[in-house]
Length: 182
Image 1 (cartoon, rainbow, N blue to C red):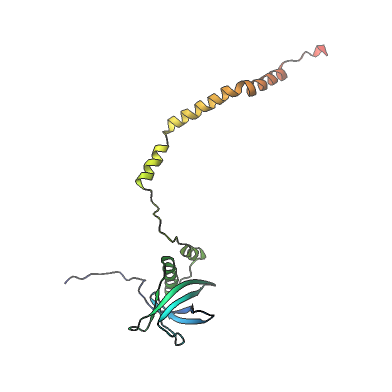
Image 2 (image 1 turned 45 degrees about the vertical axis):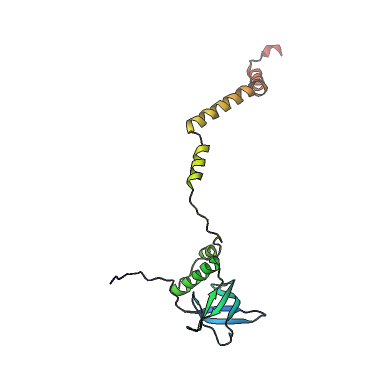
């Protein structure tokens, strides 16, 4: 017999008692008091086998709304969430964890969880990008020599039209003046 030990997971679908509003169309809103990541315990006024709804979660002074689907599970009596995208699932999981743990999260963390990218983009540099970046940059001594040559060339080109008149004017200003002539 093989025994496998697993750490407890906070993602288990415990039902929380927190307000969640379902808009099922034509101004018909239903308050659900028990819900989990898996779905809701449907109140008596929610009939049918499911459909598309708009979920609204009031949390710490602001309301978060997104579209979802509901499907009735006849075995458990719950209505399960369906048609949730990755962003909506992450957002629902974020609020669920905060309610279960009883923590007050900073506004920045909540906004960051809502602003998750739709497509996951790898944030590491590929070997091709690394090689391309290395090829573009020349060695530092070579860059320094090129800059010194550029400044030298600019000073030679600027000597006659810019520097020579300035030097002539300075020499004329600094020459001793014969006071006796006046």
